[in-house]
Length: 168
Image (cartoon, rainbow, N blue to C red; front, side, top):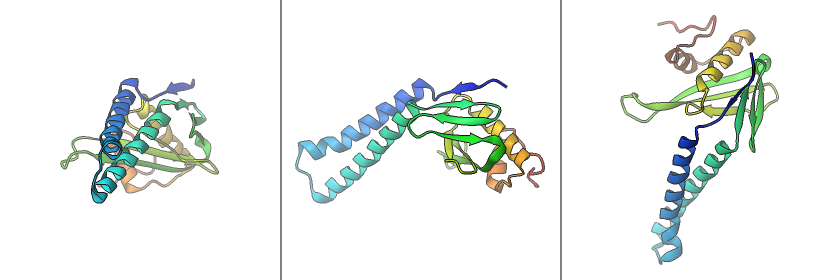
């Protein structure tokens, strides 16, 4: 298997930059330009901090590339990390719904190996399915026990881990 160079799509990143900048401007602008009530100021400041953090997270994602290889997943960037598949000791696949009926949302994969930093990616990453498949295969090889929620989310993606199929 050759190494795949994975990144978040530019269109997704630019949309996040626009949302974060607009939110920071809408919350921070009134604090700088007009005299606001203390409680309203506190609310606006909290909003500004949240949007600024989102802007920082988007910049980190923009400057990070993920190298998926047969033996490792490497997050090459400011908050990088490396996961050695043969030493995989944590895998969590979470689903976050944006609708009450759970018909829309995104997934987040958190993986790590012994002594290493946890690497988190979400389903907007190009090649996300390939990373999840490789992580599930590594979990089967290492005998890692997965949570019921992770197994259900893997099954929703059409992926199973040997010996850890869901019982219905």
